[in-house]
Image (cartoon, rainbow, N blue to C red; front, side, top):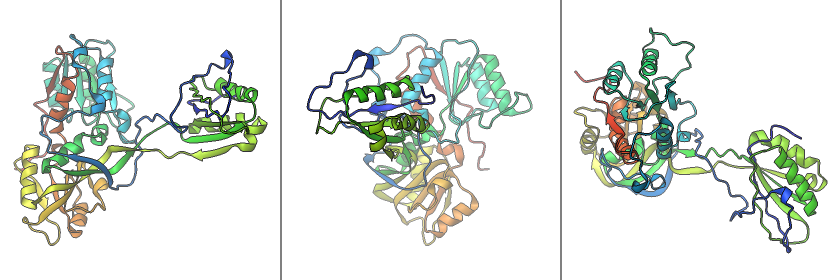
Length: 431
């Protein structure tokens, strides 16, 4: 028996003009795929160079406190619980709203601090950053869970000591029995997430994703081969099943010709070698085997950054005022593109919440909107004729918390209170 053969997903297309009789020992699942290449992907993104992926949707201006939730994540109100929830149940709701698989590979997302003694979740606090002031507020409210958009624990740590301010916060959370969860770039990437909220500040438009997210489907190779008899088919499939406890077999009872049974098998990188070794031990599969590399399919509407072709173009001055209102700010920083004035027209705008230079680089747009960019990145944009609006890092993200609060609250029992931090704010201010 070969070991290491894991996560096989099979599609067996059995082309026959007679009904194939399979012994009970084969234990086949006879459900049919509509296509031999059907794969159910998970949503792991793959970092890609920035480009524009046009979707067939249009967005309207989204108010800061109310956005329609994704249709795939709707719950029945009648099925809502009436009491507090366990932490694991809240985490399931958070995953349904924004799969962590959408986060960038370098990010540190998910449950970062878990209390040793579980307790019902009654109070959840949302914050953009977990600071000393926010922790004091959470302690005063006796919060059970803090959802911090930015992960307070990001780099690997070898000790928990008081001299590091982030480690102090983690210690305080543990001592208070509070859990800490961070979604970060999964919220940026998701459809109707932070970046869709940000670009909606300029009004409705045709929106595309700048850096497309791709499915992280675990099955990366497709193996196709033939067997001549039902006995050989059973022998091959039993060997492959034996080295993969979680194999899922799909069978069809159709035959196109008398040449034999045509088989299609998809597998992961780790399962490729043992799968091929198994097939090469059999005469017909070894002679007919072909191996295809599968591309990860894009996830439309998901990814980093957004580009909007505005339904109603505005002037640079009007765009600035719209963003001030949307972000709830008195001041924004503006760099006019070469040859542009405050009265120049803005027909296209590219946005990236937080620090957007890497995502916005090379994008053709009349206006960039992000939290922060380096001096030289701004100069590059200006030289290309693109105006730049900067709000400071967290100011480009914080307003989405109110939107997410409503989405989360309607999916939790009334006994669970979801509050926004009042102490959370960007560390920079104009003086």
